[in-house]
Image 1: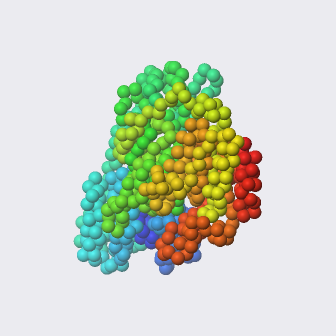
Image 2: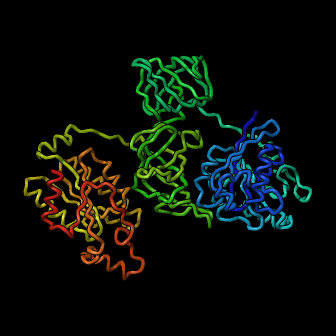
Image 3: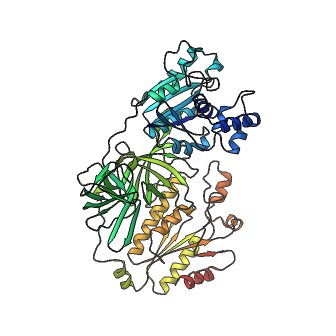
Length: 603
């Protein structure tokens, strides 16, 4: 039986759930007990008067029924004309854009609903862009509630023309424009007799007659699990795409290891050949293979290894995508650290064009460049979707921040090679007779960071230590003079300070950093650059009232008197460290005692 996956999307109250409910109802894919339950729910939650509210077939959550909107993705399966149709009904509110991405990520065909009484909205454009982002080639525009505009052909054609103008840049998408009434059933399952001017097919007929062509891809197995029943056996589990057989010559990416398949297993049985299913295999020689590696044919050139990429993303969380910030990346079965190198642009839904941007906010689509802390096996999304799509995860709260697709590998990915000199950190620190560390002072402006840092450095030098002080203002007058005070610039500022600190620690120095560093994510990134027991975060938790009185740089005064003055890290936006090494209130202790406390605890 042929299976097709269909996603429905559109703005709030465009009738997505009602449309699918109508298809389920008229194709008799509703059970007797569901029919009874639907009638009861319609009396309590229905919005269609005396008629049965078919949308309630999909709105399964209590909140959805009470609010009359779709919140979660609803999945419905029907059998019709020897086809298995799987409908994924996605929510319309922009708050649930991530659900739309989830619903559409594996679909073959999309139905984008447009309310004929409202026309094309910004959310319509957003969903269309998401469908393009996910490379969906077959698209039905269901111009719904056509009965509310009295089946007006002129208004229908205007909406179609507006959609075609947006589609002008997307010539690869195969489209159908259908006037429908999900509520009344016009052109949903069968052709409507009320719309004689429309000569095309119904929505369901188009779905059934659409041919889904899957692009041929090479054979590959993303390793999901390595099983070692004993010291001599290693089995590699995963979902196979393509075909493997005994003695098949393979290679493992990333890297250059190669071997031949010794055994193939599925359903606890040994077999000689296997295609497109979950399986495990063992190899003729033992290789160092881990979760997230990809096993493919020895002669394949489509799947590559790299660590720097250009990609399109859609932001699905309130957490912004900011250059210089570190996140976690999940691509196929691999999870690793990534850093956003650059935000290249953002899509403006009002002008229908890409515009220059320095960061990406929730529900925005854009183009970025990023690097990973180790090489990964990948393909471009156009070639092999399974190896070219990824999600970006917040490395503190582990929320999914964005979904993305790889466009191409950056040239620097394969042109840069780390080198290891004969003189290392251990040798440098032994010459200085000290353990190199980074002491990171963070806190509000006026909390005493610079004063403490200068006194601490003086005391350490008196004790014969080799030190260097990195002060935020000094760095902004030199290496960071091109940075402002936006979230993106603040993030890049801290990234540079952290990398410089790492180099200085590598040289054997005790480095003292004095920067506001208001964001927890940047401080976590800074710490990640150092080895264990090399990074000490000290939070000067001096009360804001004291900082306001001190105001050494007159920043608080400017924040009050100058309109539009950036207050991040001053009166707003400072994220208190969750687990600092020390907390010190400089309003309660002398500088001498503060310095002694730091030295006593660290040294």
